[in-house]
Image (cartoon, rainbow, N blue to C red; front, side):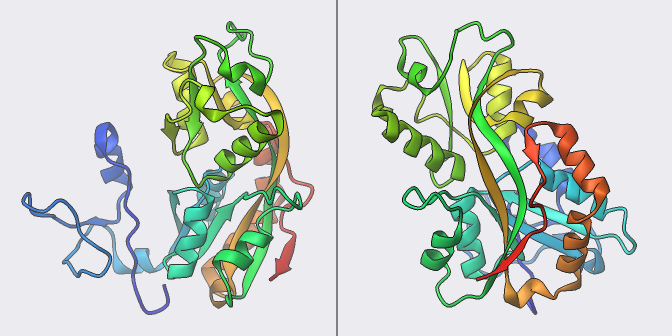
Length: 287
């Protein structure tokens, strides 16, 4: 960011080979050390050119499938621009902007008192920082279930039924905040939901859990359910925004990103995913 380079960790575990193919570089941590802090310095082995890294746009925050579409379209521009995305939840995205470790953040944080998205959270977590709020999409949130809905789940009230296994999103994600508010409105105690503590970091991960049979139902977006031919029970429609600090707004990488956002090609691809509306895509507000 600016004169500094930042590193965004990629997922590890069973997908470590895939993570390596997506990486721009790596550093070796001695086997006697459990981890490193962001204040330490370490040599990094680059897997791509310095020029390639400098043409990488860093997006941190909530997961949305349309970001992958933008990444693909950005790669069609010359010189190529890479999109590095890290799914840490909406609140995690705001904290990354506060630390100066991302160009922009994806967020869909509902203010349960006003019904507005993101603005009150910007005031709370980014005080004194000028931010552009750019609407990406409106999208359907709901319950993802197996084809044919074999457990006869009709709404959030069914999550606390005996034998129902729920797949949740992580604490701090916009989906989790939305779910908790909806449960409160219905007077449902989260402690009565089997699987409430089981957390996934993306909508697709929730959908895969339902597809595999390891969960009966999960909270997520319609596009994730449709991608895996799962059934979907709508709960609400929400607005998903991109938050861009003013200090990065005129960055050529950011401006190219916004140009792609405004294209008919991008909007048509978004609509093809299902569960999205692009009526306000590209709308900008300075806060």
